[in-house]
Image (cartoon, rainbow, N blue to C red):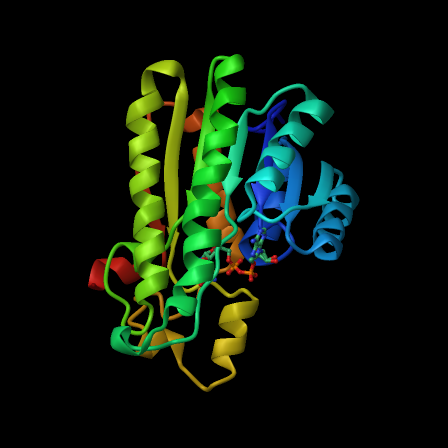
Length: 252
Ligand SMILES: NC(=O)c1ccc[n+]([C@@H]2O[C@H](COP(=O)([O-])OP(=O)(O)OC[C@H]3O[C@@H](n4cnc5c(N)ncnc54)[C@H](O)[C@@H]3O)[C@@H](O)[C@H]2O)c1
């Protein structure tokens, strides 16, 4: 049976863990060849092994999305290996220590701004010219429900994710006529290592975080949405910020 990403070349950042690793497996399951990047070289190679073992096609390398030379290098690496870039899942992003806004320092903003916001923009900046060479492509960025509504103690995280949503809409409008679509996925509470660590503090996500499905999400549930948005099945969908959150954002 044909996969909806058959023949597509897709790059994924933050592919060494959590949602990015799940996306590597899901994109490959649907037929894409995946080029995987993460600041942690060992973990991204482990993801490459997992994709290959599952019968998919993958390559991987270490790269830091907050350093422009390395971002340019990632995109050049994809094109050198595979000849083109059809889809990108710009997923690398970071949180910060939980603090009320007046207690935050400039240092608390450094990683969210440098990695989540500027990192996502730099990926898009270098992906667009390659996609234009082949008539277009699909860019999917990982934002968050925290970019749509207030999450107390997460001002910098929320502000940078709101920025990712806005960049996604802006790129969608700027490049729609030239064949590039751009959308954002907005996860709610997804069971990845940072959330698992938070769970260890005793929080009951289902009840305390008002998740109608009364459970956290699985990384694959975000990955399936990202793969669908990356694929031709969503050829008329652009500029959207779609939540994948068990209904949580409908309560906010
Ligand atoms: N898990 C959730 O509940 C949740 C909710 C909303 C949004 N998100 C977003 O989903 C994305 C993935 O998060 P996750 O939960 O899978 O976390 P994770 O920590 O499991 O994975 C993040 C990956 O990004 C990599 N990374 C960090 N900084 C990087 C950099 N500078 N360059 C390249 N790679 C880098 C890490 O090494 C790690 O492998 C993030 O953008 C996060 O903000 C997660």
